[in-house]
Amino acid sequence: MTRVWWPLIVVAAAFACGASADRNGNTTAGVVAAEQDTIGPAAPPGAPASEFPNPMRPVADIVAPRWSDEDDRDDVGEFTRVIELAKIRQGQQVADIGAGDGYYVSRLSPLVGASGRVFGQDIIPDYLTLLQRRVRREGMGNVQVVRGDAHDPRLPSASVDVAIMIHMYHEIEQPFALLWNLATAMRPGGRLVILDLDRPTYGHGTPRPLLRCELAAVGYRQLSITTTAPSEYVAIFLAPDSASRPTPAAISTKLRTSPCRTP
Image: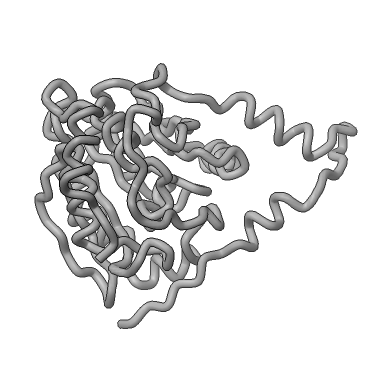
């Protein structure tokens, strides 16, 4: 079945369309600001972005808190397919990097159960507010909403069994720094699962050779890559041990001699 995805900007636009008063006389803008103040990082800062090279390819804009309509994604079995490939199970700790308004978070929460944990992480304050409201509304007690940085997910050390990046890798401004800092949060044997489209980054996708090159530069080892729809794939990588991963200086040196460029 061929899928045609259209990023939804409607939610983001509606969220940003001005303040209104609630029954207590508080403005919506004030309430939103207060909610955003309660959402912060879950760990101290890691290595700064200045220690790493910038990617040698375009970085796509972040345009909306979700990729496509949730019912459409359910109809084509996206979540089920990704989770089966990722082998996510009850009791695991999973980080959704770039969680948006929570499509995966809301489905991961019952999957990992009370003995597991889900980190819903993003860098856009408005998206985090939408996610926080959903977590409260749906009573997801095993979910922690985390505000990260463009170069650092700000997740607790050795806390994550599986990290997922869904249709967002091409939007990462500082991929080498983010991947390096993410490794700090991964448990031994932790895996990174990336769902993306096999097309240029400026077209909201990531060519497979480019993805492999960028992750290999930081010490991630590809375990599998599976075509899940026309031009769509799920790639799974083993995260490097934080003690043995390449240093930022070594990454810069490697990329000077073997740069990762869009094919």
